[in-house]
Image 1 (cartoon, rainbow, N blue to C red):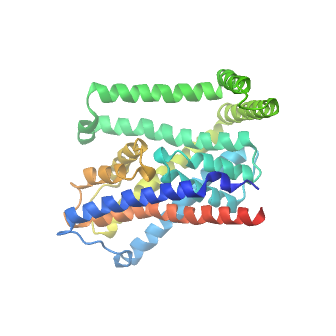
Image 2: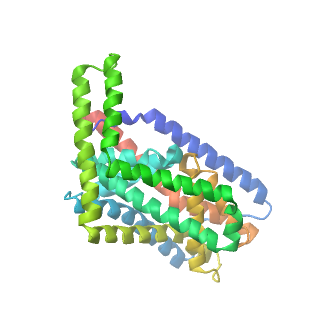
Image 3: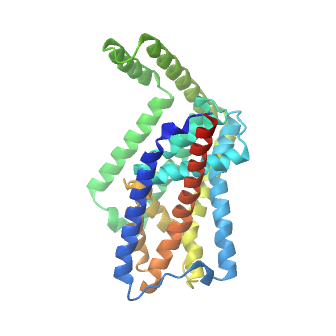
Length: 346
């Protein structure tokens, strides 16, 4: 079993506390802003139909997130147990939402998948494919929505924004291309870096050989698995893209059904999906854990014209609860369980 103490429990607890502090501060500020008009409606005040719908959405949401990684691994000839599928999802969810730019979730999931028996190349390829597919859909869909809608366009108009976005996409996909199809450049960089460490006696000759052998082997496996999935299994790629689109639509649907639960029946479902695609785009570039601050700001920015002032705080809280807080809490329990279990076994 992998050593989960490597994850540094105290560090992630610190990140979690930072996330809680930022989120609580934002809601406290918003409460004082809307305190005269707003009341935080509790979940039990929703109709039975709305409550069942929201619970069903939660189950579908987390299941689809797991099925994406499950299906990619199946295509790479590795069968993931359903229990491990859910544990990996919630572990990823906790780590990604309490680290800046969601930087730790993918690594945590790779680590856990290796623990279940998946090879490093396969687990890395699966997580990278899952991330790249969802990121690509978001990074292309959001600008199209913003540029085709006058209200959204006013937020991003100007040559500087467009130039920065083009540069970001160019760097993102260039790095991905060289990582997958031209990884000999990465190998050269690794070789030079390790030679530098070895010459300065920072690592021993034995460790130098072991690291080099391990990294080169798994870089080849990683590249091979991604190329195999993309080039030789177009059906699996298509199904994964469809699963990702459905997953994102489900994620962006929470606000629509929350609006209905609060009595807003005339708002277009498609407009809500488009709106949350743009909010997700804003969150993508928010450096704080769980995109705290950016998510709330984007939400208030767009919803202030759609709902009554006394409903906006309730809507914001339950949106964050179902899409973030619930998954983070379950993921924290999973992470704690894995750390405690590992310490007992070791």
